[in-house]
Length: 155
Image (cartoon, rainbow, N blue to C red; front, side):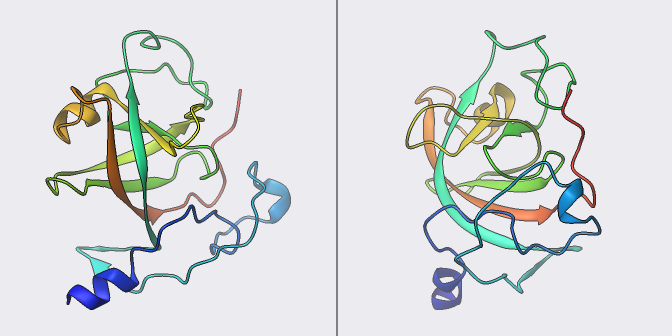
């Protein structure tokens, strides 16, 4: 089992090109280079994991609370949401802290982070649940569970 897990957790940032969606490329608001990893075929509960990779995550909170996100909705630092630079808005991702294996399913509703070396910004509440609110950053495993058939509109 350990060897299978290693095969499903490549490093690097897979992008969304090549993911099967019900939309045409013209409908997608994200342009990305081809994926460098294969789809994971591992089923997790009722959902199938589409992609798995590791990255560094950080969190954002009070300074952004109440401000609009890339989707136009108002950011709530206590919701299960996250920002990613390339995943389609509305994507559903399971975030797993690789230190303690706590996990949380989040919806991508914003763009970011804007600090080099970081690939995901989660809400304060998600960082608290995953136990990295005090340290500010954590190495996480991302499991892409769902990509919307049409990306959420950017306002």
